[in-house]
Image 1 (tube, rainbow, N blue to C red):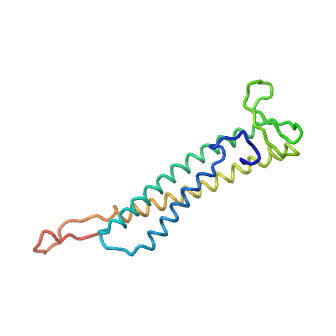
Image 2: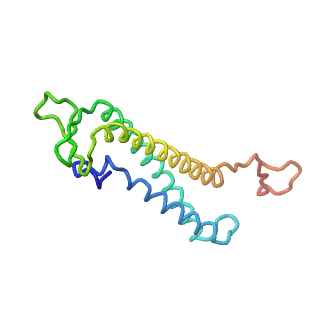
Image 3: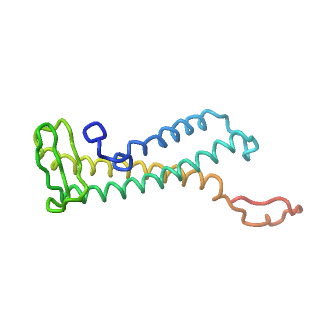
Length: 168
């Protein structure tokens, strides 16, 4: 998208949203390779788990923002009116408005290709970022469940010590 249009902003081409997934997957691999220490007494294990949870949560938020931007741009591209100008395709939202935002696509011989394929690219980006959001949500939930969903039910019956708790 950036290669064919110099007028697109960084938020309109969300290639940066996948960077956090690469970091999360590498961190998950490191977490998988660290030998498990019971009760999280190892500081390296705790730091990696905390960072993994934080990055999964941030990936979920970034994916939601990217999906919102792509939905907005999908709605915009459905109202484009484009005209060919040599090797460029000049698209505007309102052809009668002289100060309307224009998008210039270079190296395009037929403007109908922009109008037909651009919404398809936006839909593809929405689906891929939705899948990324689901993966981040599952990763954050599993990390939270592993750490915080273990609770104590109270004292064991018939136990002489008050420090013997029963995990449920």
